[in-house]
Length: 285
Image 1 (spheres, rainbow, N blue to C red):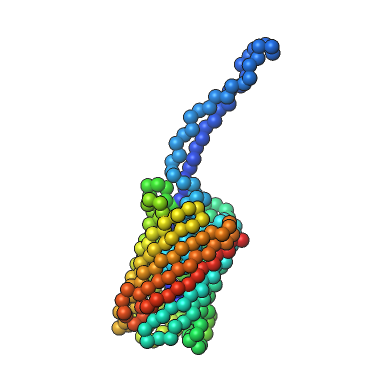
Image 2: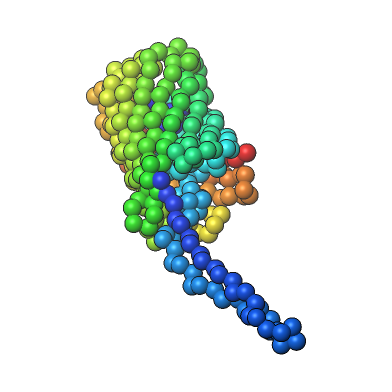
């Protein structure tokens, strides 16, 4: 299962103790206005709150990088990825991946969870085996970035052969680390894939890869992300893939975010795309 084919529990606690003094006993004609006495505000344990963390570290741009953050509890997200890429010796497909995400409400475990359903497709190549296969995902943020420890999260995905001429079941497990650094967030992903379908020839049944990236927050609504991915090929006897990505995201309002991105191949191996570009649209409701 390819991330593009077609494809960490954080909190900051702010404690403030405020004690209001009562009226001093005095005669009415001598009474003075009540004086309020405050205890000093306790220092914050962390530099950001739980909601702020999800807002800061979420990535809503056209990239392979996983952020490990849940959405708004009790709300859905509808995400559309639309892209195009060129690969030497192959026709250039148009990539389309509609994805539905949901974060449950309830206890801390549920509020740090995200459930996903995506059906990636390729167009422009005729009938592609595996087109529109359903991919189910469970992402869990186990530990939030608290100013000392980084965000730690996992993403488990399973591909069901529901698409065109598809077979077998694939599974992907991704470990996600994210840490606030400077004006943004540093990310690291490590993933492993067990591939059992027959959507490609000479399929490599165990695949793995690494990603590293940085999200620079220009302001609350605008950010730029750079990422690098190294992964083994899907097919045996093909060289590994090395890809560099640059993407941006603009939050138009509380519900809608758009994120264009481009990527280039850093080698000339058979499966490495030479160049690609795309757009991600995210709608929260």
